[in-house]
Image 1 (cartoon, rainbow, N blue to C red):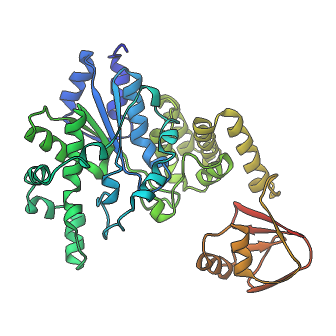
Image 2 (tube, rainbow, N blue to C red):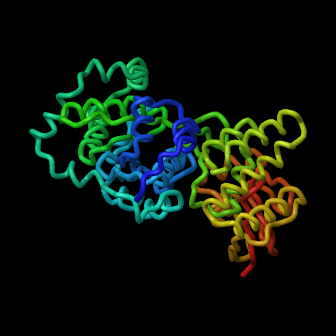
Length: 399
């Protein structure tokens, strides 16, 4: 594929949603030269969902790919057993191989919503780590000191709070760096919190006689709470495979302060349009809610197509502006009788646990017939609709 060395595209690639580059001048020169580069991005299947936070580096990988460079995607089936310790306040629970396989089952189809999978070089890092002997691991471990590891802020905080750091966690940056050796990466992409791991890649490549990769770090994206990094652990994520109406609703629930950041980092809307949207909001000529609706439409269109985006927008307008019931909702068949409210919510599959159900009932977030319910028992005599919050509905039908 012919390499595109367009100055404007290179500028966008190196600046939009980018927090830093190492070494930027070297990378810019390489991109302008027309040389074909190998661009690496790795992701550990520690959960089955790829969310919008993951999409930021994946969209950057897409930009490289569209300019003719080779996208190299590494699925960390080996490193997922450890889990990246970056930013963690405690060690992850080790994952079984069966759970890892289950998690990455749909990874490629999800990633394929962003990058061209057919033109992507794909590796599972178990390909090389499972073949390594003890002597190979010793050699790899020799390229990082304990002092370097303990300089990490996340590790330092854990030590100060008396929490353990496993030897495998200390090895994680070396494993990620060795991935770069195995695929001969020219550039590695990662979130800005990944910088120490990415720099380890340069060091390991140098130790193994390879040219050091350049690094491009992308913005971290806050989740729907507007505060913490988007993560399944925090329950504030938006999965790229979520149903169109759910995705639309979640985006509309995010704080207005994230609108422009989401446009820049998560969409393909041109920069000049985003500048205009931002100006219109600041000047008061555009309602942030309408701009956010445009954002939700763009994102649903990216992952589900324009028709589904239009349907999701119409459904949102119906339920949230006109306060009407959604056209589609799950139905649950039950017999007449007395039920504990907690058990009833579990039967509807609207909640994942009894503790969540109990919390929602106590908070008054559960409605029946449009009225908040706080009773812990309910008698079922006829059909009715259960609603939790603004987005979860289920129809109870009598057998």
